[in-house]
Image (tube, rainbow over all chains, first blue to last red; front, side, top):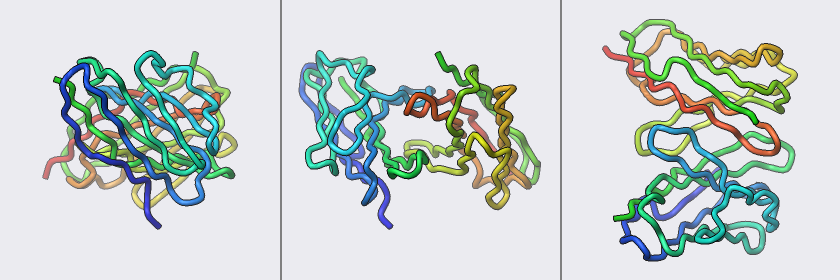
Length: 113
Length: 110
């Protein structure tokens, strides 16, 4: 069974540029999470989807961050414009409807210069 | 607000030692607790999931315990190996999301 797939693995952009990350969850998992992990810290939730509905986006900086999960499968997280402080690892995770066990992807390491 | 703390922040041990990683949380109203492993530059690998009604879970050389009333969990690693070197994160599932500690960075040297 394929795990959670994220792309790209690495991204370097200049500040003020836009960037997008993509996540394909485990097949059949209806819950999808985007987490932000700063260096030396534990991940923190940005947004949680149940199918195509964003049910918790309270920690998402909506002035520059946006996310979508059309059709309740793949998801895209976008930052526009990126700031130096956005440099971090962006992790995607998924879980099934009958379990809260979360499975994570490899993450996207973003560097803003 | 739920807070998760992991002690120690870093640990270096010789191969073969048995070791214990600690995790504490401030709000005992958790649904479950999950231990993860993270290798440098990689994502998180789920090691063990303990439901709130359970006291422990075992997988190979790993054993995790949960004491909800005292807000504590421990991850026991038996006969440590250099391949166990990684950062270990615990997370509690609370209010429909995982809340993580900052991790314990483990180094096992030959």
